[in-house]
Length: 114
Picture (cartoon, one colour):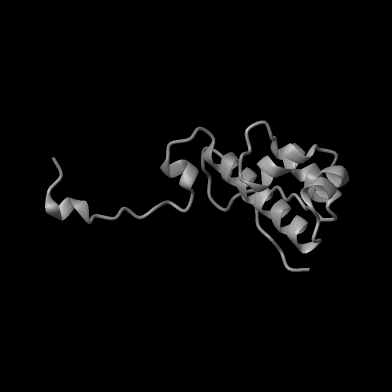
């Protein structure tokens, strides 16, 4: 049983909720979520309906709805990248050698101002 002192304890997250939850391939899942967020913002900026966005990116409206609402099962990173380019977004992929040696490389999505 937790003591009164433990009830208020807060654990600081790692910055990746998927890693904190123990999801397999957490960096990839975070990247997909970030790509979906960029898609959502591009649709909003262009003031597109879900139906219009679906036509533009080549998906059906229910898939756009799922994507906008963060239900990303069945969406690969590649598919999300294609949606972004169809929405007029430029994507640049950079591969670089890390400053220090580690077992695996990192995957990050970041937005750069035009």
